[in-house]
Image 1 (tube, rainbow, N blue to C red):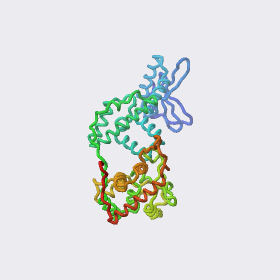
Image 2: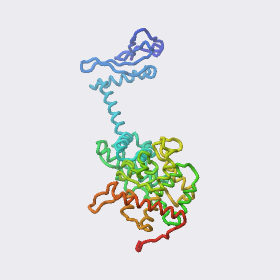
Image 3: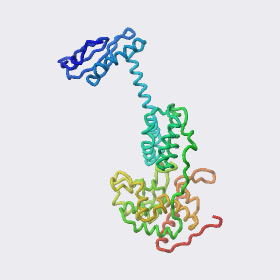
Image 4: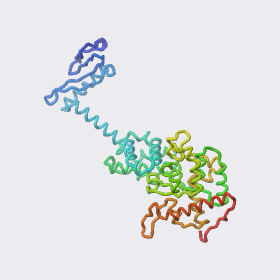
Length: 406
């Protein structure tokens, strides 16, 4: 087949205008003035003259071009238009790419941005990128089987991170249900894996709740060496007892020092409801001292590496470890500390405590309280709490009392 040779192609020189060298059976090469050489296949289908590209020389050799040409001629003999067949194949490949596990996952994550916090979005994305995408990312989501997903989750188990394995099963389940709703999958295979993973033993986060031990912790925080940003965050953690992520992502625009309020927007809250933290006198003093240092950042507690990013999510845990409290106290533990002592020692109203913890609190008619509910009462409670902590640090420790039957 053909009249062209490798030598002919090699010696063909560019001219002022494009010209063609024919090989036969519809295959030819166009040599352009800039020296580029394009293979073409010319044919007739349904009475119309057509032409398609067969590649670029020398990336596509003469032998390869002839092979592709022969395949196109075979399609013609079967009544198939090579140009349409190529278009259909390209569209199928694009559809597969759009319906791959990774593509659907990233689309799902984007759809959740209005409901998730930035931290949660980044965490879910990073976990999928690390634990799932390398093995299942390019597969069509509808073709993935339960055993394949289990194999991926087993890899996470083998690292000893059992909780992450269970979280990833739950994440994949949510993703698959999104794929079902958008017509890219027919069933949630993650649901088939219930009970297949090694169970996680429930452990409560470490927290100090004995007043005498709390006094020692507060004095240790006052003596903490390190940056003013981390020391300020550690001092405010027991005063605010918000979730660590809520504290870490605090922005100056949310804080009104004159009114004595920190208004956290719903997208940063676990329950997706706006929340108000009354600022006691002690907290206002700490924030006043910190403001000149970090006011050029939008974050109250910016990273020491970049003012455009918040403090690391490990900064407070690392500070507790340096203070000798690793395994005894966590940043989240300040919530348990406040919840226990405010109830059992200070005898504060439980509904006010729960509301200040941003837990789901409802009124007598079953309606959720809004963010300003009992605000004056909560302001007074938060000031009493801060004053009590000062009393502890001054070693005037109130004995720990448990209620009868507690």
